[in-house]
Image 1 (tube, helix red, strand yellow):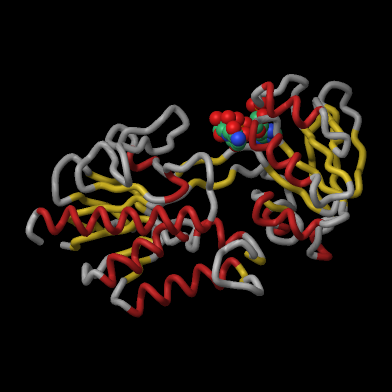
Image 2 (cartoon, rainbow, N blue to C red):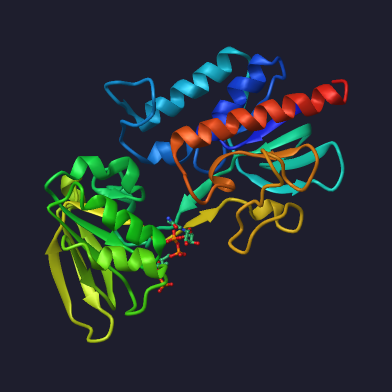
Length: 307
Ligand code: NAP
């Protein structure tokens, strides 16, 4: 039985692994279905402190993993299919094998929702992005498109006008889900162009490994056309990876973990870290900070129990 199991190998999980490993707790990290988390989907990271020249996202997360492994963290690949948190030790099923632990850190993240367009996945990191804060800087004086009609889309469109020559916001309806204030701020921004009742149908050019144009369709008239675009940003929501915990951990209506203060969940000994709980900041550095908090809480929890 493990003192600590950490679910997720993004910034939150790896940082929790570094801290718990250095505390001598020999954590087991279950790397999840997106090993490395959101950073493994991005290219250059320029806002993680300590890297004045920037660092590639996958490299940053690999460095964290090596750092944790150096202190004794172990990693297993695989996804948690089932969890039993009803009694201790907690039990987790990964690839038909059950693992047991005294404390659990859930750092399983939230996956960006994608549209499912034919060339979308191939162009992630090559013009297709789900994070304006991460990638906006690379689109200075370029043509940018943002998809979505919620607060994230408004926030990202507004933010991206700092970089792009123009930002086109594409939304599938005429009505916006975004809050009035965020929508009005965008409406007042002359650099934002609006395409409502419009959906993207494909992105080109996957053969050149870069985004050059998007095929769009007006859902009311059926009209289709192609528009030149350099950066394609999705802001259509995130899906938290909490399926195995439904009915056990307190989750909000969208499935994100509800914090019970600090890194605590409703179950003593189960802690949260990173995007699986954080709907607001969702940055590599905040996820790392959350992983550190969860590790410290797990360590203190075990110490109080005399382990
Ligand atoms: P959201 O509110 O769920 O909005 C998602 C948007 O994407 C909706 O407009 C939705 O269209 C669209 N969408 C979803 N699936 C789509 C698809 N397959 N094709 C095309 N469009 C699709 O998500 P969010 O904007 O990420 O916000 C999540 C939460 O965080 C919200 O509670 C939000 O208020 C909050 N948030 C707050 C701030 C802030 O206050 N600063 C900033 C960001 C987020 P429909 O409208 O047609 O469903």
